[in-house]
Image (cartoon, rainbow, N blue to C red; front, top):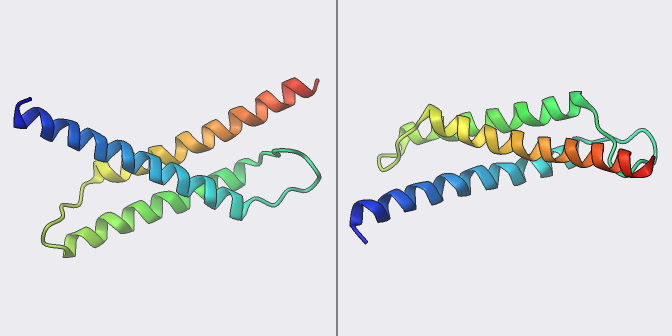
Length: 106
């Protein structure tokens, strides 16, 4: 396999890992923020999801800002978008699970 192709696969793998780790961060943040009002399996509130995604975005942005001061790292706005997308994907999956559980209960 050519070295350029290995480098491309490595780059793609790293970006997928970032997306995944920020998805996990979003799930953990949502769980910490989430305050159910009643005994539902998975109650959903948009304000909690919005706060979660805002925190994920801020964390991703400050991580990229930090990279300005690290000589071997390059800060990229596209990385902030990838990281925030990971958080958004996790929250969308949670919302879909809520919809699915609501339908199964009816």
